[in-house]
Image 1 (cartoon, rainbow, N blue to C red):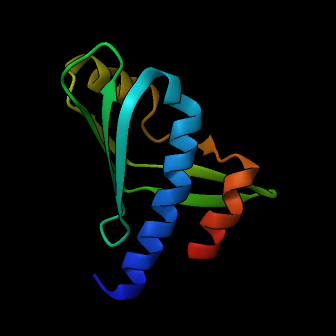
Image 2: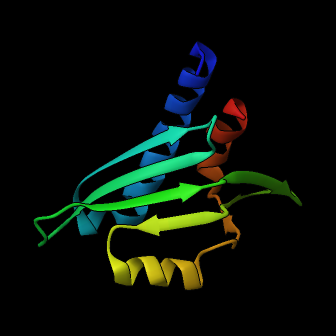
Length: 112
């Protein structure tokens, strides 16, 4: 990994952490997110409210696609440290496109 990749990963991490906080902030008391753009992977660690053990999620083969003026997030693999969540993610989220809210698109497009 080079210095440019490090800067790019950190900038993208900030945008995705803000998005993650907006979506699930009321359900967690702590979370962290690490991006490795060379491997096209995202590692998420969460501490859910009311639970004492961490939840880990790894997303692989991610990509951002721009189409018809919109930006979408996709990924080819996902795994979770909880069996039930891992199964649900495989069944419902794998290889789907998720629209990125407009307020986060500018950060993403600047670092891609």
